[in-house]
Length: 496
Image (cartoon, rainbow, N blue to C red; front, side):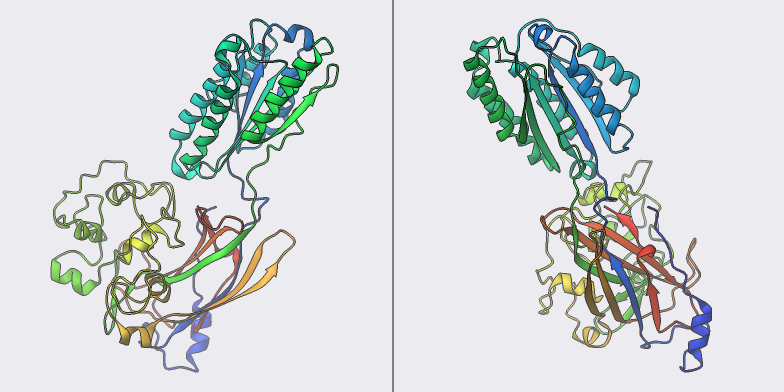
């Protein structure tokens, strides 16, 4: 969803002018504004993340007798037909007998590629080498996980179905304990910041299979599913093979609010005054005049790194020495570009790398550590924690009691309840917001201040997960400033 911007109505401001001393064309110091609105967390049904489905299908010679009509291929095809229209779902297919073969080019949605793979599932020859198939599956998943950006990885769900009609063979290279270790090794890939891996198994029984052999195979596959936090399904010979009973849905969670932050990017809190930052680079205009950088260009030397970053890493903001190579983008739209993220060590596709409820860009502007949760620290030893200073728009790097007493933002957040879409909605008011006139900056409304309203939300059952953010921008132009700025749920864009 694209970012939505709210333009403050001049009509409302002019109407308010009759009952105040605010003059047209000016921000009047110390006449505060408040932001009011309603925010609702994500609809679990609409926030869909990647689901990658892997079928590991036994095509050994015995399948010619236990599944002569190749229902296994039809059952896989039914799952593909049902879910391939979902943009978040992709598939991979492995067939195994004496050896294992990856039938797709990794995870794919290509109908032609999947149709060709389904045809090959109809083959039946060779023995039943479980470990070869599990090794191939682990290699496929590890390559896919490591080849994905962190932003995709943490939201991805891998669903694996292992289907066989008998015991593994040859037994000397397919010991049960070794097989269990293979499943555990595959499941350990969750430690690579993967959203979820589930390993399901299914057994196709034949009346010609001795009872004790069938029971042993069922127990083996059931144990494998238990290790994989999945389910086990038993198909009796002649019973229709149906893989649609397995849960292939995306990770769906109810979200709850973890943080709200309102900030004015054009106003920085000093020790005893509010300072103008016209180019929103984190360095006040007065300081830029002292060090020789431009107050209307966030990157004075045009080398791809902001003046603030160069100042922090002790580069010269007047000399193009940052080493950025094009293209320079901001993939996660956190306000820190791809080159700057390399210098900072933050994730280029995660809005909040350290999962602390403060976006990377905002932590950087305020001198905090975007790689570690330092909300509860007190950087300036003034008795106020870093997270509270960012939220209240005071300075985490300076002992500023006067600024806090006069200009700190005040918050009121009241939960309305949960609606019929499992969304939690909140009424919020943030008051004592101050404005200062900025210099004219290219591509900005002349003299305007830019408010940003951030809401960080996490799954209620996993508060340590990466937050999903909603953010609204409010460009406030020069002129009479309304005493109240109202924001609705539709004004927030999605960032994750």
